[in-house]
Image (cartoon, rainbow, N blue to C red; front, side, top):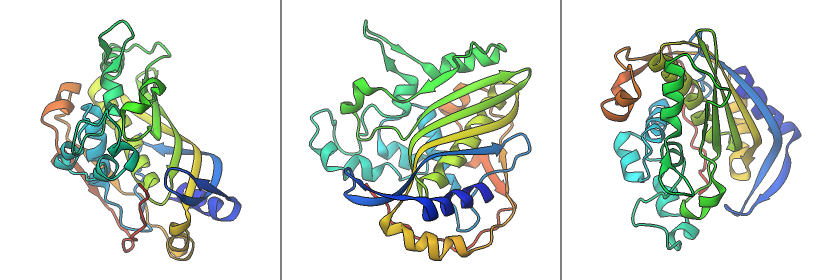
Length: 283
């Protein structure tokens, strides 16, 4: 929690006001933030200075792993987070590539599981990484990228968390996740849960011990309509100790994650938290 709160305080103290064209709102913004999560010791980075809805974050990660492109399917998994971007984004609603209600287009997991090749066919980036790591191979290119500029026009939102790089040292697996933009009061809460959980899951299904997860954010910001709640409420609260994440040990493969795994296969213990804070969400 200290590094999260330090980031929030840094934005409040040092941030510059920037107009955001997509949302039409001002953001208090800094450039470059680096966070680390200790997956080896199961220090789950769940925000404790307000109630965090961790299940929705993990459900969204499962949707990315499965390459889903429909907000209703994400909702069925346990997260409604894509409904607004799929159905309320004016530019996307007017995009001829949109296939109908709840369609997200070629974003996030679609790129990770089915990156189109110019000559036809597609590349399943995640399967290649899992296959390599399961064999003890790290070719220094175990990279999962969601960032495909050639298909930005085919999706409702450019990816914020865009690249995950896995590194194997002996029998210990590490993850470096890169993010171009982060709504710190809302998005960061989801993102750090997903970075931690992604490494824990990948280590489990490839037969390795998890190490640390490294999380780099380029543009970290607080929207103007969130600032008062962050500065005057959340940053005044004392954090609690980190809880623990427990993953069903029966999850053994990528196929398991693609098929039968649900939120019932994840449990968080020792989670103490303050009251929820209803931060505004910007579409």
